[in-house]
Image (cartoon, rainbow, N blue to C red; front, side):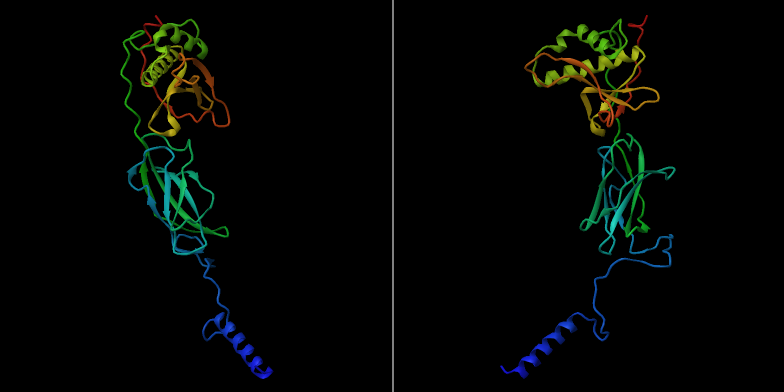
Length: 288
């Protein structure tokens, strides 16, 4: 190939590449479509030119725990992040809000943090898109309800009408010692299911005895679910954060007798307590 033909071919190739990168008839380079913030507002006053996302789940259902996953259907514009908000269904007060979350495909999710929701309550939630700190329109609002608390316990016929035991002391360590001494058979080596049953029995007697001693003790919803902890209770004190209390060391180790403890959890998470109020206790047999 001579030099004249080589130059012509090179020029033709460059022209094709340039044309591929230009909009037809405009001579301007093509670029991806990105969300934009317009000087005029959307109907709700927001500035981001993008459609609103839509709540997918949960919607008008009762969720199974207190940290449900919220699912948004993304807007029709790529490159966005999303913010989730949980609101009081009555007052519309924002109770929890996520940081901007990069879009998933085709949906974006966020788990409600612990210690925001309460049992047997109704909440609203919504989401909106953000791009470069510019907010888009809110999604529609969806509602959901939280789990119902478990039924109250059947009163025990042992250790008095309520199950509380007489005890000279009034603090946690004294109470577990009194309850353990009152029911030594419940501490013996047994099979796993019997150990769980015995642990629940001892837990309730500790709660009842503590209530009769002036302590506000309750059962614990395990990690915010409707499931009650076998070997754990919640200690509530005025003006303080609820604290979890571990009542046994390795209670499910059936190779040894049950070893009762009073291990109070502290900050920063306080043992993730979820207080379940205990039914009224008859203290007349132990507090004459």
